[in-house]
Image (tube, rainbow, N blue to C red; front, side):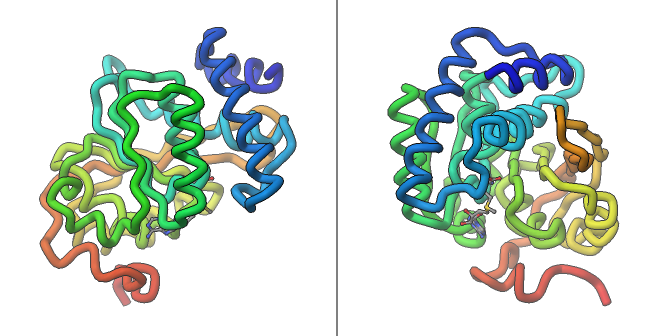
Length: 241
Ligand code: SAM
C-alpha cells in the first residue's frame, strides 16, 4: 500500500490503519475475481492503488469547507467493481451509499465485497440509471450523484441529475476532455436543471494525465420526461445543434 499512502499524502488525504486494511482486502478481492471475470482492465497492485483507489478517493477534494459525506445519501452510477463508491465508503463510513450497476455479474462482486468488508448502509442495485431515475424511491432523493468512466458528460447528466434533490450535487470524474465536455453540456444542463459549479484538476502520483472532478449543482427540478428510456440518452445526447 506504499504507493497509495504516498499518493494520498500528496493530496492531503489521511488514511488510517483500518482504511488501509479494508483497501488491502478490496484489492485482494478485485485481483482474485478478475481471474474469473473481467471486472477491470487494471490488475496490477500499483495500478489498483493509484488509478482505482487514489483516483476514487480524490472525490474528497470536492468537499468544501465544513462539508462532509457523513449522513449524506450518495449514489454511484455505473459503479462497475465499486469505483469510486467503495473506497469512499471505506474512508467515510457514515455515508448512505447506493451502488448502481447495469451488469449483474458486477453486482454479485459488489455484494461479496460489501459483505467481506462488513460495510453498513450500502444498497446495491442491478439496473440502469434511465430506469432508476423514474423510481420514486430514488428520483430526486440523493445529496450526491457520482460517476467515473460511464459516459460523455451530456449523457451522464441525464443519468445523474434526475436522481438528485434540488441543491444536491453531481460529481463526474473525467480525464483531460473535461473542460470540452463541460462546454458541450450547456444544453443538457439547461434541460435537466443543472449548473456547472466548478472543475477541479487533480494530479495523481505517477500519472501524467491530469484528472478532473466536474461538479454540477442541481438548481431546479428535472422535468418528468427525463431521463428518457434506456439507451436514448446515449443514442440522442442532449446537445443543441
Ligand atoms: N465506475 C467504474 C470505474 O470507474 O471503474 C466502472 C466504469 S465502466 C467503464 C462503466 C460501467 O457503467 C459499466 O460497468 C456499465 O455496466 C455501467 N453502466 C453504463 N451505463 C449504465 C447505465 N445507464 N446505468 C447503469 N450502469 C451503467
